[in-house]
Image (cartoon, rainbow, N blue to C red; front, top):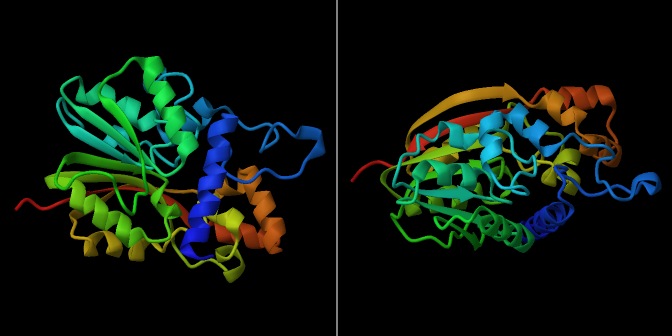
Amino acid sequence: MKDEEVKKVVRKNYGDIALKNSPCCGPQPVNPSNMNSCCGAPPSADDMSKKMGYSEEELAKIPEGANLGLGCGNPVALASLKEGDTYLDLGSGAGIDCFLAADRVGKSGKVIGVDMTPEMIDRARENVKKAGLENIEFRLGEIEHLPVADNSVDVITSNCVINLSPDKGAVFREAFRVLKPGGKLMISDIVLLKQLPEAVLKSAEAYVGCVSGAMLKDEYLDVVKESGFTDIEIVGETSSGNVWLNDPLAESIIKTIGISMEEAKELGKSIVSIKFSAVKPKI
């Protein structure tokens, strides 16, 4: 798919998720017996988030509707935020990480969420009203072209979003631009240990399912380094293959591209979730 086609598919998919209040991350299959659910009987958003590393205490702090069960980790837990920091979340969705960050940076700090999906921004802004917070702002924009000033942010996080971008180099160059010298990047994302079959790479469903848009791990980290970041450190890595195979979206992808379950299991072995940090050097 061309870059603009990718963005259109991703925007449509996540717009639907925002409107459905569902943790599913894929297009809705035709299922006459269950027309109100994109996954049949999906687990709750809280259950999915706990598996990603969010604690019950953290989930209790966010307003209802801010957690859609998306992502592949809990980057805020690793971001070392402190009182007064300016924090930016790339692909902020309904705002779960922004609300957790707001609690950490306090009234003297500032939280900015950027998302390209209007429905997600609308939902996030409604969640801010529910919470009555004044230190959070959600901005509509693409993470490849951030609506954020140069050298203005202390900490950037992103939770399983950059893999959806067709131009990851632009994302990291933008992150470098808006970070203050000495600022920190903390990312949770999906990467690959080996290249995917051509049929998977061409699948729109696999793209919005965070699979075909993922890069090889070493190439991904090279892009981060080439963008100017230093002190790149992987702080966590887990296999996501079994999680992916248990996602109802996987069944749809497998049928669409015509591979066997054995082939799907082999594919799953190459999918991993990593958490890493990096720093913008001080001048």
